[in-house]
Each structure stands twice: as C-alpha cells, then as structure tokens.
Length: 211
Image 1 (spheres, helix red, strand yellow):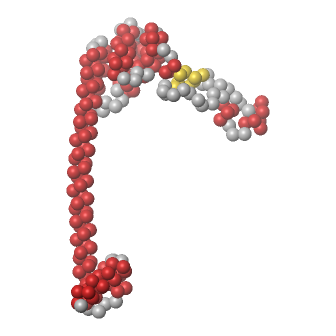
Image 2 (image 1 turned 135 degrees about the vertical axis):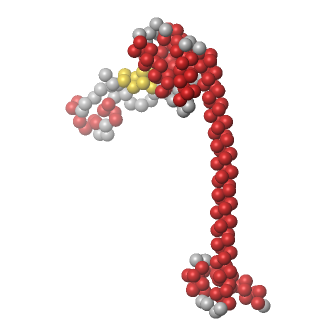
Image 3 (image 1 turned 90 degrees about the vertical axis):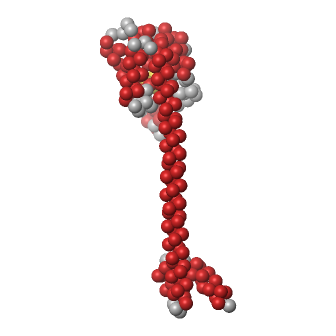
C-alpha cells in the first residue's frame, strides 16, 4: 500500500489518485491503472495521542513534528520513558534516528556523541543544553567566518581594483606616447586594448593641453 507521510504546516492539497497525475487519463477510461495512496498527515495527529503511544514509529513522528525547544524537550522526555522498556533493536533504531536525523545539523562528532549519550542516560535537560550550546557556537562561528570572508573579500577586491587601475594608467601613458609619435588611433587601440572612445578622449585632452 502506498503511504505518504506529510509533516508540513499547510493542509495537504495534492491529488490523491494516481490517474490524476496522468495527462489525458480520461482517454483510457477504466483501462488506466488507478489507486489511492494513504495520507498520514502528521501535524493533524494530536500530540497527546502520539505521546501516549508506545509504537516506535509514533515516537519518531512525535519527535519529528516538534516546532520549538519546549515541545522538543517534552517529546524527548516522553521518548525516553518508552526507550527504557524498548526491545534492543527498537532502542538502536531510535538512537540512530536521533543521531542522524534529529541531530543532523550537529557536525561535530564528539559533541553529537555526547548529546546522544545524554539521551540514553535520561539526561534530557543536559541534552537540550548541549544542543543549545552547539547552536550558539555554530552561530558565533558563522558570524566570525562571515567577518573574515568580508575582510578577505575586501582585500582581494582592493588589490584587484588597484591592479586594474594601475594597468589602465599604464595603457593611457602608452597611448599618449604613441599619439605624440604620430601613430593612428586604430593602431593605438589595438596595441593598448583601450576602447576607441577612450583613445579619442585622450587625444582630445592632449590637444587641449597643447593649446
């Protein structure tokens, strides 16, 4: 049986029958394959119902739908209450889900191992503190990286602009020398890589300067 697990905030509005996804399905009438999937709308299932359930799947659903710190801590405490009496395989599955899904944003392996260990020991408050601390450190690191990137980018841009300006000034000086020696404007453009308009402007300035 096809099942769709949905945990979005808005109501599910997509078509629920297979043939509705096939363009021109009406042409085939009753001969087209058709079926309806089962929609499990996680956010329409009451928290209390999930928390009372002893099913591993419902416990994972309960953790997955937490929207803030308070609801996450409450869900983790309820999950640990069931965790203590679970079969070994279910305990392993739940721990792995916490490690790889709930804590997927924690890149530091040592920090992640410590947070998972605190759950296994029932120290949910310490676990939440560890998550909070890690998030704060990541934000601080992100800000510091942003500042460093900004400084480096500024330095590189400054060097590039200075280099380009220096090359432009050098080309202008060469253009002036060539014009004073009687070279044609097209030849000056080809040699210096300046645009024709730029060379003509340089020539005008030189004529004014002479006069």
